[in-house]
Amino acid sequence: MDKAYFRVHLNTKKVAEERMEFLELIEKRYSARSYKPDPVEDDKLNQVLEAARLAPTAANRQPFQLVVIHTQGREAELRHIYDRDWFVQAPLLICACGIPGQGWIHPNGKNHYEIDTTIVMDHLTLAAANVGLGTCWVAAFDVWAAREVLSLPVEVEPIIFTPLGYPDDTPEIKQRKELSELVRYERW
Ligand SMILES: Cc1cc2nc3c(=O)[nH]c(=O)nc-3n(C[C@H](O)[C@H](O)[C@H](O)COP(=O)(O)O)c2cc1C
Image (cartoon, rainbow, N blue to C red):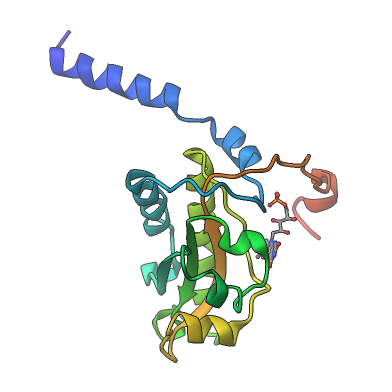
């Protein structure tokens, strides 16, 4: 067998073994509301951001920006955005912003920038769980405080925040509706 092929094959197998099964990963992600002060390694942050970058967006417009914030020393001002201890406890906080002016608009007038930005955050949170990092979606923040603290230009909209760091809590058992309550086939 060709040596180069063998090497590639072996590497692929190793990567597959190291990777968490997809459903296992989805189960593993949870809303962490307590974080250790340990720093997030640059390569892990880059992996998480890369997963966000690869997210699909309507018409591939990519109408988003991610603001990565180091929380150390900024806790007091960041708490104006969302006043919870855990919101500023992780070393990093990420704000996913949408840019309406760059979003794809359906002929019916609906702008898809918000959906796009949400998918980006979903990629980000799953990628974080894949490398052992915790996240928590935060939508109930003060938009005007976020604008001010992050110096957002008027054309940029903060959509969702998440802390990013090593979790210091244990996940609760997931409470979800049964599939039979959520799925219909062929017709409503
Ligand atoms: C769009 C969205 C917004 C959310 N906003 C908040 C929030 O503002 N504060 C908060 O503590 N949790 C927030 N959450 C977390 C949800 O409460 C959590 O995802 C849900 O209870 C399921 O728990 P799990 O993430 O641990 O599986 C939000 C989740 C989503 C998807």
